[in-house]
Amino acid sequence: MEKVLNRKKYVEWALLLLSLILHFSNISGLSIYALDEAKNATAAIEMMQNKDWIIPTFNGEYRFDKPPLHYYFFILSYQVFGISEFSARFFPALFGFLTTYITFRFTKRNVGFKAGILSLLVLTSSLHWYIQFHMAVPDPFLIFFMTSALMLFYKWSKSGFRSKKYMLAIYASLALATLSKGPVGVALPVLAMLIYSLSVNLLNSKRLVRIFHPVGLSLFFLIALPWYILVATKTNGLWVEEFFFKHNLGRFSAPMEGHGGGFWLTWIYVAAGMLPFAFFIPQSFWHTIKFRTNKLTTFSLIASITIIVFFMMAGTKLPNYTVPAYPFIAILIGNYLSWLVTKHKVQRLKTPVLLYAVLILILPFGIYHGLKSDPNLQIPKSMLWLLMAPYLALPTLIIGYFRNKVWPVLLSMGSGFMILSLVFFWWAFPKVDQQNPVLIAKDLQQNMQESNLYYFKIFNPAFSFYLQRPIQDLQSDLQPQKAEGYLITRKRYLEELKVQGINYEPIFEGKDLFESPTTIIVKLLPDQ
Image 1 (cartoon, helix red, strand yellow):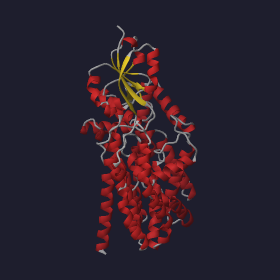
Image 2 (cartoon, rainbow, N blue to C red):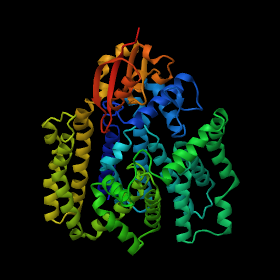
Image 3 (spheres, rainbow, N blue to C red):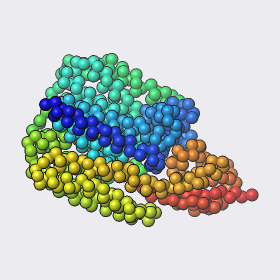
Image 4 (tube, one colour):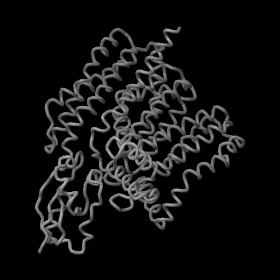
């Protein structure tokens, strides 16, 4: 018995260590390249430099997009480690690991070790999960506090809503989720809690009094409300108006920034994000509905479907929106796989294994040729060989399947994508990242630091992060034709510069990574 327990501990710690390594894989070696990431990381720098803890700004202008919690974490990291890519991503990576850890512990305590370790395997194998937690954005904090609130609610419900400790922890988590990304941080988990409570007849008058406890409500408002009041006061209501009506209601009611699509797109994002174990989503959902194996799987099913359906209905659709559902989908898949292992249902693996094998064989070619199709990227042939590294897991997969061994098959599926994640973050993506126009333009940045710096219409926000100085709007200059220095803009605006009589000499051109615009840097030649 002791040997079995020790073996379980080794497996648990090995997977948790792998998860920790993958969450922090090369977070310092990749540039701040995504537009939203650059704006968030830079806004935190500006708040720190201005010693203004209330109003977020980017390039000196109000940033209405998100509340401030992630900025505070970035500032703390900047003060400890200095301003860098590592600092901006330290807490997102940490909160990703913590979310994985609490999902494992929660499942292990409520369903058992086998389901817990398999839910951990599911999350630890998701490349998309790691990509989300490799970015300096508010989502990692929202996901952690939403997940915490929902899991605490489930534990609280088992006590008949009697534990004040759980009640206070839930309200605190909801408040911090609200400070992470706004109303969705409280509305979405509360909706899932309500649907679950009604579906299993948890609610009555006494329990409603315990749930809506004045102390809990006071704690929520004490944490969540002061900043909203302060920012509304300091901006005469402008920040709150822009944030609630444009960036919340606007995004939900209609596509923003071209991120629209049909309701089916949300499920595609979920399926792609949960690979390689996405092949078990239909079976695990159906298994939960058919057998109702335990209250936790019912709760996880309701939580995951609530999140997915909510964003199906939203006008704006992005891959990161449904990531809060991943821990609960992982619980469902982990529970289903635990049943397969216990019942030795090897035949149930046939279709998922076949689909996985096809995917892992064609994925390197799909990624490689997809990148090669962009004429602005130089993709070495060696990348194709690097992306084939997950093939190393295929022999164990095949041998395990034909020997009717479920565990080797599942571990092989997970290890293939873990290898892919390591290759992606340490070798494959860095080769693409080196072609980021902001990094290529580094040789010019010394001159740009010592000269006047302007932008026209719009510019790649990563320049603000790396230059760490304001970039002036050329159109705000009283005599733009006489302006001296450097100007950053996009290629499509060059004709407008000529029309306005602004003389310039192009010195750099480069297409933004994974974006359609082309960044242009010109030296201004003022009229004398």
